[in-house]
Image 1 (spheres, one colour):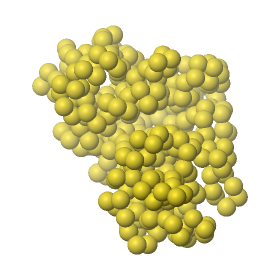
Image 2 (image 1 turned 90 degrees about the horizontal axis):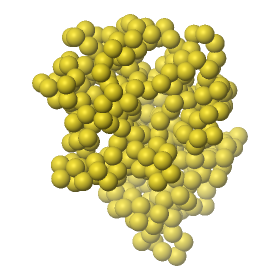
Image 3 (image 1 turned 90 degrees about the vertical axis):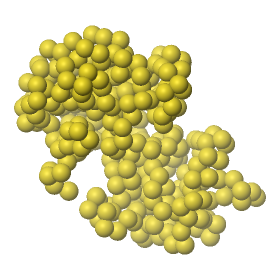
Image 4 (image 1 turned 30 degrees about the vertical axis):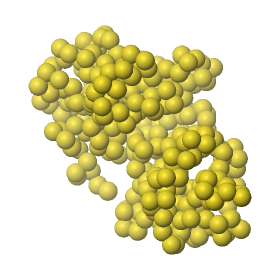
Length: 335
């Protein structure tokens, strides 16, 4: 997909720029041309100020404003016409940002429920880029200039936070690992902002070996066909191929990680998308295939694993959570 058509959506808000994995696992890039920030375990969001208010979008183009009233309230007084890139984060019981902590809020669309959640499990919008200001598109400016404009804004406000930048990526990697944080994002200081593009100018160094897979089938529990035992997961070859013909490369099957309640909920959805043929190419070869119910490749799941076998199967995979914020075409390279 080219650059055209990626620059705007919904009244001008932009799709977020995405990072590529580090070439050396666990080690961020180094040198004077890089700046480094904490990689947050939250929900990516692009915010737009308009008519004295704030609109929040997730990375799949959905408006999520109503779910986070405390962030909206904190934006009062900001000038209209801003487009800001950042991450919505919530703290778990240990005081560490966690996707699990913010997950219950992601799909709240009832204002009363959202208001209750805003006091029970408040979120913070961690801001790291400014894409538009004063009616001017800033994406073609280098990061250093965008950051300078961002720091001119009054962001010292409730439920808002400016992401710190660091010169020493390895030191930040050690500190975030010890603190139990997600990892490090490194950015070229002179990089322009490429909306919707996964660029090598931004590099992610996670502390855990994880990926986002697409569910392509499910297997019942042994002795109980009414319960979900495991799912087959895979990833698309590339965006253009998947859009023309949505097939997956198999990563194997995973059964552990989700609670019984989460599995039951997932199974209800999977039953509505069943099909006769596997969405994998080539189809998995395993005795479990005989018991598999194939499904359309629509749902994504975050998986942690030990390593990958020579034939591309994940070893010791564990399902961490569903990823409704990721489109199947972006699986395996998503944040």
